[in-house]
Length: 184
Image (cartoon, rainbow, N blue to C red; front, side, top):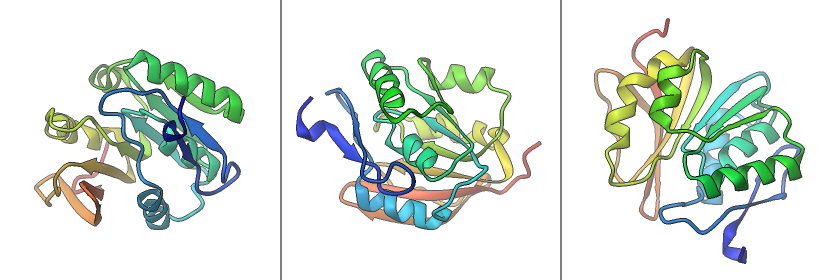
């Protein structure tokens, strides 16, 4: 893997450790400054939180959450090369509490009974994933849970979601969303 296929964890126990990932079309690690902003929004310490990294890709969001004390992180990745890379990074970091699943995001959500405090959602662009998934995600969130979503466009408030924070870096729009409905 080339130097371009590494991304640094920005804080916590594994601060400055590198996560490696394969060359795959559409695989885009969240930029350092965007992750720094996100973890400022969430609070630097994620102790006792359960997180879901849907479309895990490089895994940097999930590993960063674990590094910052998250109790549990479930990482879901369909692409086999990325999944294998996630397994290698888990082993190198001794990230025993990371649960890494090689499966489709929709199938995972259909079978999942867990609720999460933070869902990281960075799906492939231009495939309509946010429109497909956002209507179903409130049932996977704790009552105070939030979704961090990246997209190729700005997400607007609607009947289901309130955008509580947002930003833009280059062509990436990033958002922190809160459900307008209590989860059950």
